[in-house]
Image (cartoon, one colour):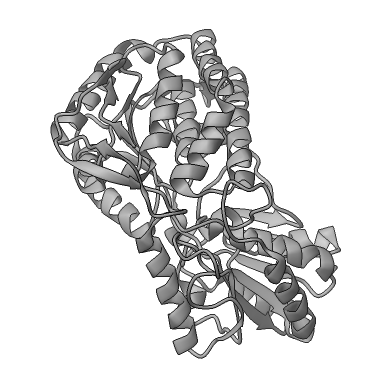
Length: 471
């Protein structure tokens, strides 16, 4: 059993002032893996002060210096590939497939950051004036448990490109993953105070980051409800915020599509990351005339979807991160039943032989209408709702009838038609005939899926403040 009893402030591993511990529990077996000592308000203030002091010099570093720091981090991470994959599987329950993809995305993110740094013009001509894009200051980074190190790397790399310093609050449920990335960041030899990491609770560490006047910006990924709390607190000191929040992504299957190709992709989109993904395509919109064919294909594919030990390379769906999350998903499945939706496959309870862990039967509902809670609320588990439509216009209307707008999916054999439909969906990203990630394209949500964008030029400029010199 492992005890993590250090946080990282001003270039050093230090013992937190906080005295509270949180247990680290395996989602696969519900056995205790270890415990983590949590930082408190004083620890957070110390981290903020370190970042504030470091900003004075780091904000003046050159493009070449920042490029080297990013390359150093990437090199340190490359040395420990197996550890990154293994710890995500053990602590979070991410499948080997997903953990491997996440690791690859992490590395590619540094390449994109370096490319952005070396192509972005920090001094622009606007009208008759010079406009200098200057780093904002200290950035508070608050992240969830469903892709912990991926979020740390993408947000931190953007801050480094901008010349900002950071205070990072990861989830206490990701302590082992955090320890590993912290060791890599330490090895990269960034100047003291450029990054500081404080394990702790949201209501303690997160709250101090949200209200402390020395934090200039918050970059948060998590639930819409918590995002609203952060935004309300941030406004008191006019902090800039980037909020990447929840989603209820529609996946529109158009009537001209090859279902044998589109439906397997739809199941992957719905169940990615064990269903614990804000971009999961959990509303499958299919033509009414194709429903029976869709039902047969979906049932066949989900039946063959392997649920179980996330270490196995063939496993497609692992456990929920915690018993609390398992219970939440079970409650939603029961809600769907109560609302009159019909279970096509899956349902309540754990798959046979997987009673020890937080495993959910991959579940598909039919006879769903878009006003049901299972079609409107983010479940964050492997639960898919199939909704039928009669016309293309109705499909677009149903897709947009949501409080969210993070990501959507469109499948069609006609690319021009797919683009036409995609261009009418109110979502920050629309995937056409596939599932991919472009680290140079903006990512973020419409409506209650967030404020602002991450990645690429738009993501970088959220860490910069324009200063116009007029003469």
